[in-house]
Length: 256
Ligand code: ADP
Ligand code: MG
Figure 1 (cartoon, rainbow, N blue to C red):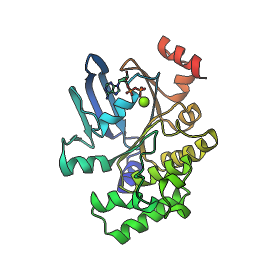
Figure 2 (figure 1 turned 45 degrees about the vertical axis):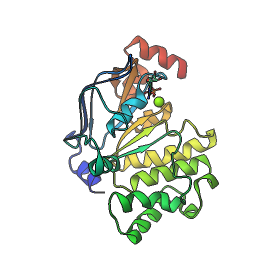
Figure 3 (figure 1 turned 60 degrees about the horizontal axis):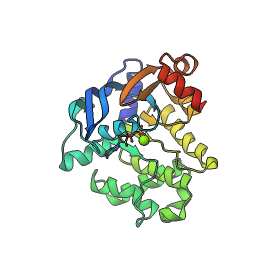
Figure 4 (figure 1 turned 90 degrees about the vertical axis):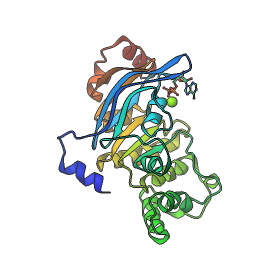
């Protein structure tokens, strides 16, 4: 993963990787993203928090073009998002996404889940893709589940496979949209630990989560959203000890 070494070489230089410039999006009459300006530097871990319906998922989904935007611009590694075809498939490989609901291919084995994209999008030879898949499955602690189908795994195991699948593409940035929200409590930590590890290895990450312990320990920056806007941005320390906006104070008083 060459991007990781680039990040280390330029640590502190804050080279931008994902840039949203005055992004607006509507769903019909609903102005779901309003004048969003957000720059994510290489190697940075940004945690996005905010009330339900504030636009956090939509924000993530625009970055890999699962949702289009109405105005403004988004670039990844200096390039505007491609609209379709092979370039779009490559963008989605560069911008890995992990969803609340795992979204594994139910009719494929764990190993196939982690090799398919490598073979089809990255055109990696099958043997090499399988080698890489097994290494990644080992890394996330499910190396012994490779021949099973997703339904035979626990939620925590499935989510770790989903992370391995995204990592197999050699992403430049990883988006996590409430990756632990659908998990039984005892499985949350096994997923957070994998994410924490990735963060400490220098992966650029955008993480929507209500796990404030993770935000405190892994985030470089907290972005607080409400009603489609970025209301507040701060370091985790600043944000949790001294939130500035009434919206953030109100939100924190309900969840902490
Ligand atoms: P969050 O992730 O912060 O809970 P979302 O980005 O999922 O918020 O949703 C923001 C708002 O947009 C909500 O009011 C939601 O109902 C609405 N919304 C999300 N997706 C769609 C869609 N595909 N069509 C219409 N409305 C949507
Ligand atoms: Mg959401």
